[in-house]
Structure formats: C-alpha cells, structure tokens
Length: 586
Ligand SMILES: Nc1ncnc2c1ncn2[C@@H]1O[C@H](COP(=O)(O)OP(=O)(O)OP(=O)(O)O)[C@@H](O)[C@H]1O
Image (cartoon, rainbow, N blue to C red; front, side, top):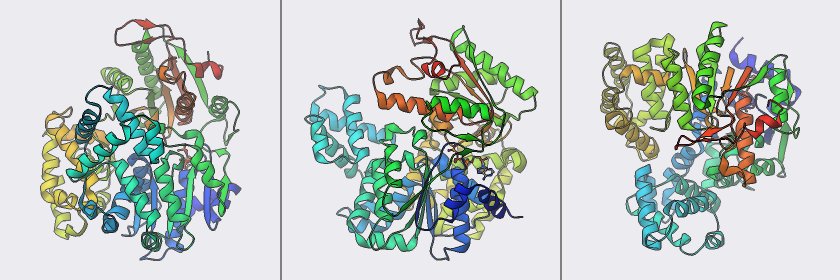
C-alpha cells in the first residue's frame, strides 16, 4: 500500500479527521498538539493535487517559519507529491515576496520593488539608528523606540495608532522605510505590507493568484501576524475570485507574540460565514500521563483525549543551580540511551539560547553528540541545501538521511531557468570530490556551490531573501562564529540521526521525540520575570511550556533549582516555576 493510501486510511479511522479531509469549501481545523493537524493538511494537499487540481493549476501551502516549511516539504515528499511549478510550499513571507510582489510590483508606485533586496540585520540596525537619531536627536532610548516602530510595522497599524504612541514615532518609522528604499532594500515587514496592499487593492492580483493557486493550505495559522491574516482573507474571501482555504492551527500553541501574532485571529477565522470549523480532540503522540499534565497546564480549559496509555512526567530539583541541571540532564540522557532510545529521539529544551549552549557543551564534554542551532543564519531553502550537500558528501546517504535525488531537486529549484542537465552532473562530481576533503573549511564548499551556479540562481529578484541569508552564512563561515567549521562540522548541522537535539522552547514547536528534557524550570526564567505583570506575555510563556511538554511520546523530565543565577553570579531565590506548582509537580 502506498504511503498516501495508508495515511488516508488512518484518517478515516477518526471521524473528525475524516470530516475535515472530505470537507468541501473553506475548512478551518482547530486542534490540540499531536492531533494530526499537519498529517491532515499534507494528506489532504497530496490527495487534492492527484485528484482535484489538474496542472497547470497549483496550490500554495504556507506556514510561518522555515523549519515548519521544511517539515511540510519532508512530509509531502514522503507522500510522493511530485514537483509542479505552480505548487508552492514555503513560508508566508516568501510567498508574499515571490508570488505577490515580484510579479505585480509594476502595479504599485514602486515598480523597482520587483528587484528590491531584503535588508540584512546590519542594514536594518543602521537605518533604525539613523532614523531615530534624526528625529529624536539622540535624546531617547533607541531600543524602546525601535521596538515601538517594529510593533506598528508588524501589525500594519493605522496612522492613529502610531500617533497614540507618542510624538516622532510615525516620522521615525517613515524615515526608516525611506532610508531602506534609497538603498533598494525592503525588510520583511515591508514585504507583508506591500503584498497586503497589492492583494487588497487590486482585483487583477486576486484574480490571477486565485487562478494560479485555487487552493490555499495554511499550517500553524495561530502564528500568522495580522498582516498575513489579512493576506489570506483577501485571497480566500473575495466575492468573485476566491481561493479555497484549508487552514489548521491551535490558538493554545501560539508562541510568536513578538511578531505581532494574535491567537484570536484563528478563532475569528473559524467563525466567518462560509467557513466549516472542525475540532479534533484526540492526541496520537503522547502517553496518557503526559496528556493529563498537559491538560493541567491549560487549567482544564480544553480536555485533550489520549490515544494510548503510558507516559511519565517528573520534576527533579537540582540544588547546584543550572550547572547541576546540566549534569543531571547528561545522566538522564545516558540512562535513556542505555535503555535503547536512539539519540535523535531525545530533545533537551531550555527557555533561553544561552542555556541551550551550556547544556550542549555539557553533553559534548560527556561524550554525547549534541546539536544546537544558534542564530548564525536562518535555515532557508538555500542554506539548508548547502548543509545537505555537506552532509551527503561527508556522512553519506545512510547517516545523513539525504538522498542525492532530493538534493538535485532542490538544486533545480534554486537555479531556476539557469539549470541545465550538465549542472546536475557538475554538482554530483563536486560532492563526490568533497568526500575526500571533509577536513577542508566549509566556506570552500559554499564558494564552489556559488561558482557552480548557485550565485546565478540566487541573483533572480524573487530570490533576494535567499541571497541575503546565503550572504550571511558565507560571512559567518569566512570570518564569523563558524569560521573554523569544516565540511564535517557543517554536515553535523544537517545530520538528523545519532545526536541529541537541543533547542529553545519556541523552536521546539512542531517537533516530536520519545524523551523530552526541560531545563531551567525556575521562576523568573519560566515564566520570564518581564512577563510577571504582563498577562498576555504570561499566557504566552505558559503556552511555551505546554508546547514543550507535548513534544514527548513517552517521557518528560523537568529540572529546576529553585533559584536563578544572573550575570553577577549572585543566586536569586525566586523558587521553582509557578507552572510546576500549578500542575502539582512541586
Ligand atoms: N489518524 C491517525 N492515526 C494514526 N496516527 C496519527 C493519526 N493522526 C495523526 N497521527 C500521528 O500523530 C502524530 C502527530 O501528528 P501531527 O504531527 O500531524 O500532529 P499536529 O497536530 O500537527 O501536532 P503539533 O500541533 O503538536 O505539531 C504523528 O506521528 C502522526 O503520524
């Protein structure tokens, strides 16, 4: 039996999943963790492509983060979905840039946007500094003003809202935008705003997009910021040319508040006339005890039903502080390995990046392979392609989990019209060559890939976001934090097996493991002390804890000390996290 058929059969066993799978018209699935939202979305898309969407029509399948988009692509690959030029699977920002702004920029008063580049972090910081300095003359706290401007840009606030935030904010925001514009740059907030304006203001844009992508699939809808929600609504709820929407999400897993997202948008979407809401309630991932604890974290607001017995949750006090938590985490990981749990079925989750780095060091020093992704560059289609090339060359197909065919497919997409069959041959030769050069600097492989055609492929205007990220990666590999990284080191970053994953609570979203370790469960860290008097933020911190716990199939091990240590080194006796108290674990 094919994987798609098997997946459809599994959905048929669950009446709610089956209802959503068969639903005609707009469908919004609201469902808890592990209830099969992503499985439902990808199975339905695969089925629709084979049965309802004949070429040249296509579909757009979008989500918020690159990691989530990569997971969608992986699952669709597994269901045997073939490539189609009108099938877009990616982030909502890349959809806005490539499928809305690039082809329709001529309709705006800024046709040059079709060739604009995405501003890098440094360019944004410089433009913010200059704009704020010009308007406020260095009198005010730059960080505060920048975050107020970002707040309004992300929410596409109307002018009155900007004005309510104080004198000079609107002016500085406008100046920031025009400073980027003078350099031929836009940032992702601009991308969203311009795409929303194009779709809302121009019927022709809606008409063309609805013809090209008559079906729109959105995963993790709760994380879309208001601008992106408007984009989806304009495409799907136009009286004359609507695309059909299939959206899945969970307001209780919204963890991207800093991007301006509001979990209520999903609930409101589900209540729109013409939308069929479907609620799922069974969790297929976690043992019953994990679900019991997860329900307690939610304070009984929503009962999730487990599909199997078992599961363990425990909390351990580590009186020696965070270093002690790391030591005990190492022991717990070793015990799990001793019981036969594969390394890649274990995850360590911490509230902060710096804690992730500390626990990774502790694991590695104890001889346990561990991987944490820092903020060196984002994992996009192009950067993950470069990592996959290193992995295939250095680790081979088995250990790397990458097929040469999948690497070639990505290569073709990145090269676009500049792809030729000879370029496939050249890529294969290059990768075979690197099998014997695994100790060379990783920057050399990137330079060779750029020379081989990647640079040309990324010079297309629609690829400016990818080009910016590859530029950042190159910089890091040549002179940044990754400057001594070898091909093997780069390969390790893409390796999916035989290593423990270490991640922040936010980035653990959408993942699943047999064993989950949560460190740093101390008040002032979890929740963060800045959330104490901010109910919205406090709720988001609770949701992050909820998301972390529900990543586990079998075991959740939580560690706390009852105090936190700040940079001064002085312990602050804040007590264990209130979340542990609420669920009766301390
Ligand atoms: N009907 C089903 N029968 C068997 N297994 C299922 C079924 N539905 C989902 N699953 C399994 O449950 C697990 C969770 O599914 P999935 O990742 O799609 O859930 P999700 O709702 O997207 O989770 P989260 O919101 O936590 O990311 C997967 O291993 C999936 O294969």
